[in-house]
Image (cartoon, rainbow, N blue to C red; front, top):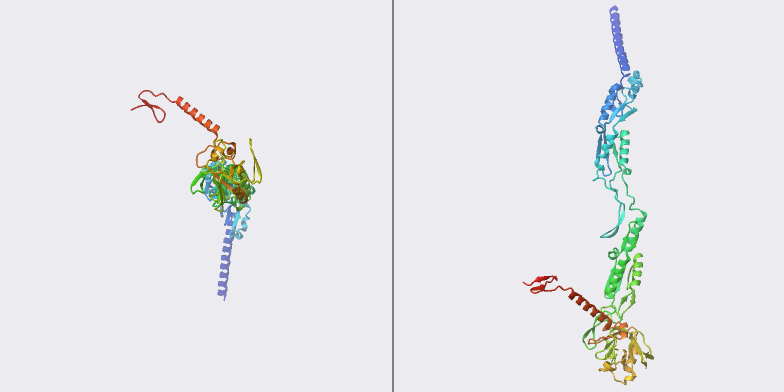
Length: 527
């Protein structure tokens, strides 16, 4: 029994001794680390994302400095191009301000058992230094600032293309503002950032954008003009003024003001007139005798009123109108076909001294006539005319005559068709050559009566000679007669030609024996 008590006491003492030893060890460990963490950072502590757990202030500073030396700033421009700045290139360095020691002192080291398992991220006041001149040199040497990469922005503008006028959008370009870029990169480095994408405000910007109110208004106006389509009804033909024509008339100045080059519009109207005006044009005319004569002159035919047509065309295009119409005419003819005389007309053959009236292609009347006295210079005007008016009765007056007639139908100035009772029924033949009229067409009253009743004002009159004549009377000049002969003008031409020949002869080099004049006007020897 006593032995059992003795063993139990020994065991108790041994256990207490062991517990005492463990306690002493624990106290030792606690005291050790309490003292240790007075000069070292708690485990799982980081500063500026750098692990400094278990390090002294000096060791942490060296670790932070080592990390800073590996500093790398990655930059991206607006096109996604990447550029980098190494800390080593700008002498980037970490300068402690004593904050590390303060952080260790503030740790409450003997409370370490509750701290060592917790992750702690600390911030310190620090000083990052770098060479600003080296930074500036590095920035300016970046490829994004090279001449090839620095593309100036372009303003939105209106441009004529193969498809017509278009609003071309602005181009942002890649022209960086160097000073602003340097300042921005410097602020990024000062903040310790490692990545930065260039903001749009670092680039030079266009001053005019595609949504500019002035541009959008101007292009809308242009599109309205180009949407106009004027179709000219020219009878057998059509002429169309559409975008393909109008686009060449439009002008846009540097301030985007839209105007029309009126000279080009006028040129178009002139081309229309040149193509379709028939006033005074020579025509091939199929005669009542079955042959064809060429006759021009006179005052008959289509005439486009160029001034009025220009004004109307400009207004219609500016209003964006789509329509079909005839041009504005100052004078019209019977038909818009190639044969604008039509098939209702009066035909006068001066050579054969005969007159015919056709109505819708059917001969209604024909008669012998007496026309103007050729021998006295009163030959009747030839050409294509039209009945100007009708008068009954009428008194015909001239410098030396006054005649009463029952019917008068003028067609060329003061020349017209009328009855002539003084002819006593004698018409035709060669009377006109020596005893003809002062220029009018004398015809039997019975025929003139029929003509007066049936022929409408505006009916074409085709009058021609079959032989060459020279008409010199004033009325033939005024009437634009086909055979009008201007003696003074022809004399002036002859004198000018004679003078030119004399001058050419005076400038002709002298040709000696064995020489001749070459094609280029020089003297050459005869081979």
